Length: 209
Image 1 (cartoon, rainbow, N blue to C red):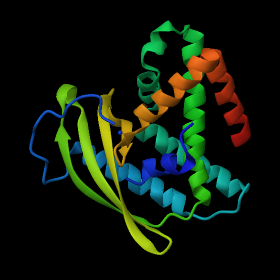
Image 2: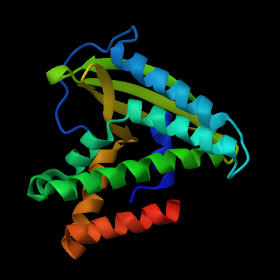
Image 3: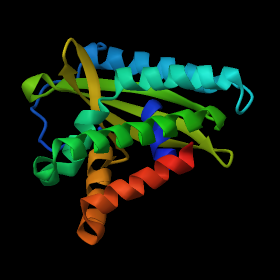
């Protein structure tokens, strides 16, 4: 499964399966940028709060982080795209369990960020509108590693889900979550079948409790 560090970076800043429809990068913040910026600020503020591990305060804070992640990241859309051709072959019960497990695993990774030391700045570089009303928001994160600054390009692809825009893929230094998950899921399914994938996800979930 995808690493903890990559999942935590979701909030700090989706590989695109379509070519960009050429438009000028917006000089002014667009609706997608506003959504990404608001989510980043909200979640990073929550992650910056230091509370005692296992405390009532930590559980309450974890609940707020999970709620914010659900509002920003469309994990169901991400999961369906990552399974690609396998999705339509699954029973409804298998689809439901898969999405439930994926939400649990991703949200748990965010919550683990409560115990991480995150020091970074986010630059919002621009936004382009794509076919179907999708929006691409480009950002760059400047962080510190071993006392030296380094930069990470993080792009978000958003689509309208009901009345709100949500991210359904995040591309970190050219590698997208959907692409990353799809490669891992395909590899596991090829070796162990879809039941094997679910079994592995259940084990990961148990270890995170």
